[in-house]
Length: 210
Image 1 (tube, one colour):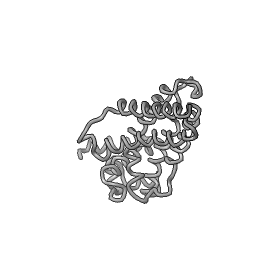
Image 2 (image 1 turned 180 degrees about the vertical axis):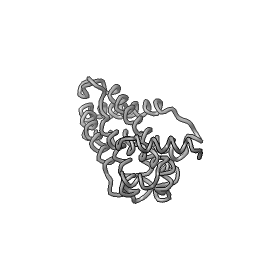
Image 3 (image 1 turned 90 degrees about the vertical axis):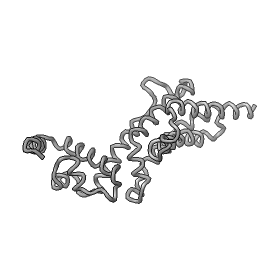
Image 4 (image 1 turned 45 degrees about the vertical axis):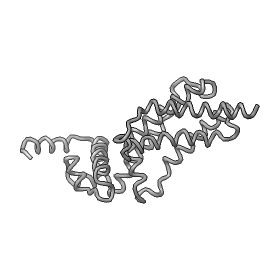
């Protein structure tokens, strides 16, 4: 490392406010956890990725587990902000539009946080963190009410769970488990098929009940 680079990094260490520093450390931890795995990644590796010392990490996070928890906190916050587009009344907007809007927002968030979801699934270091599952349950409950009103016959929650689960599985299979390398699938087209499937199931159920 040249003296100029070291001087620049030292100046950055001095100038950066605490929230910015935490964000920098978390971004470095995210790269290292995804590259090496949570268990194998070390604080020394994370510090090197961030261009800081180990000691500076411990000023903001007590241990490596706290870093992972911070990353999950940020991901859950992102999911918690999802909802219908502004001004959209979920009770009256056409169902295909609602499913496309909600599904698109959810799919985008999963894409952005797929590495964190993979970490959640990769070991027991977050076995007691059920916040993502709780988000899915809450969202499926709300969407399920609308599906029941459209002819879901009391199975709206399960249909909503299936819809959301298919989107999660799509991202994990395509991006994290390598299906992209075998067959590339357009995410918006996949979403359209899922929306059509829900609409078709509601139509069949409504017809059967007549």
